[in-house]
Length: 162
Image (tube, rainbow, N blue to C red; front, side, top):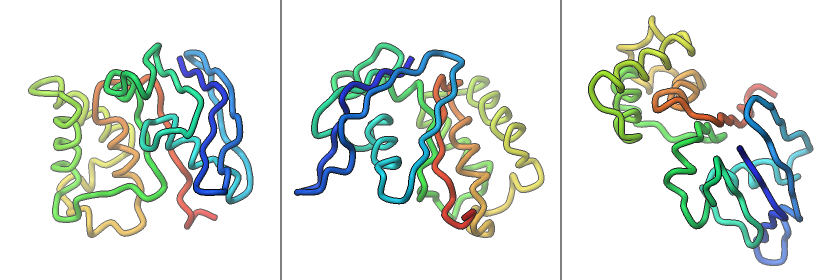
């Protein structure tokens, strides 16, 4: 499902990721553990196609992330550490918007949003503005569910959680 081969990322003279390789099959769970600065977030950003590697390859669901990123990214639900949000939108409006960005329309979009609301316990706040929910990543987590059922889900820890 995910295959990472000799992944390297440099920023000037600094090598942030140095030759990471692994494979994760359907149903397996993988976690990155390490101190700050170990390359966990940089690796996730390369695996999800947010930044390109200096060298190495990432394949998701058989799709090369550099050569064919759109179908690869459709298989991923990813919540980065500092996820953007449109603060003037309601929680429900934001989830509908992100589901539509992922190509869902009509009944498919409605089902995906309902699944996200249920999985992340957002019923009570569906009509609240996102900006009234400081420090709450439940909306961001739900965004990862508000699309076609992703095969891969990833989230970075909230620094406030310690």
